[in-house]
Image (cartoon, rainbow, N blue to C red; front, top):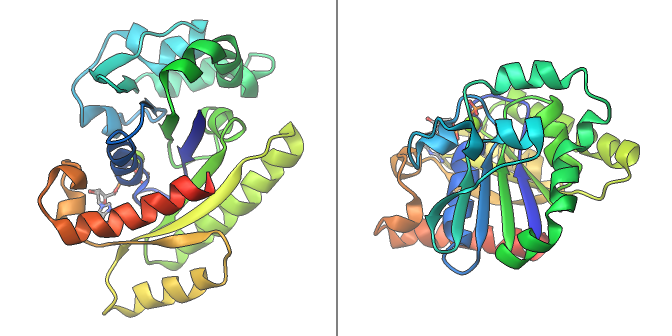
Length: 241
Ligand SMILES: Nc1ncnc2c1ncn2[C@@H]1O[C@H](COP(=O)(O)OP(=O)(O)OP(=O)(O)O)[C@@H](O)[C@H]1O
Ligand SMILES: [Mg+2]
């Protein structure tokens, strides 16, 4: 079982879009558990409206007990919740608060690894406590940037953050970088790709397309060219994780 977390401390770069499409791709061949660590619940909303705290990350963090929502035979969701912001405040007074998710994984390791091949986590644009919980147990952290200097700098900051966490918590998260919303006829996109070429962690880019912006998964559309483009990147993700 491999754990992949999508994060970057920059709003709107494409974390949720990437986590969603990656999970939708992985589930075509694998068993996947998807988690939404963001209080915006953007990812959760793509699958429905879940308000029972038993199905959410709030209960997972608060009392280590959670019932994943079955979306398909091989596909479960632990939903996000609008009260995650308050949850983070409550966790501030807990000891060993960076290890809460890791502890839940360890306690349920046997069952989880029997049930799932991949755990995919969508996070907020922050370096907060839930994000730290996810990063220190991840096999792979996926950073994503759109074509702007700020977005690129957020990837550079993510690389440093992952290195620091690996040092501080004795963890071994690998990093991979993906560019998003790329339009090759625009200079900002070309500049971002040129910068990223210098990074061994760089895997490739997703083009800017309304079909990706739609809440529908690319793999449920009939756009074979776009599907092939995403498939190529996601196969690289599978290779490096
Ligand atoms: N490749 C793409 N082409 C076109 N639109 C995109 C693409 N990727 C993402 N978007 C759009 O950009 C917006 C931001 O994407 P998304 O919500 O995935 O970012 P995020 O990093 O999760 O944001 P937040 O920090 O708020 O959680 C959304 O409206 C999404 O539909
Ligand atoms: Mg998001």
